[in-house]
Image (cartoon, rainbow, N blue to C red; front, top):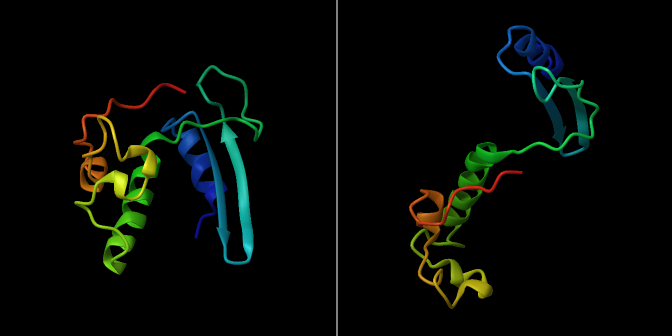
Length: 114
């Protein structure tokens, strides 16, 4: 089995992406972490302190957590966001539902550049 370093270095060499960073852990703590390549093809090498725009990478994680809470009965897909976040109980976002946020149908504008 290849390590994250081997897989990501190979991806860089095949020009699939300019650079990557990884962190793998378990219940006992960190197991492996590192980085390879550059943020841009013509940029300086990564140094481990680079900031990354995770963007869509978080969607499956957020969806998994929300659905686990739904399965446990701790959260409802058709509940309003204000039921969980008091700052959103009034105003133009008061009627937004968890489902709308998960399916990107709430009307909230897309992400702001990092």
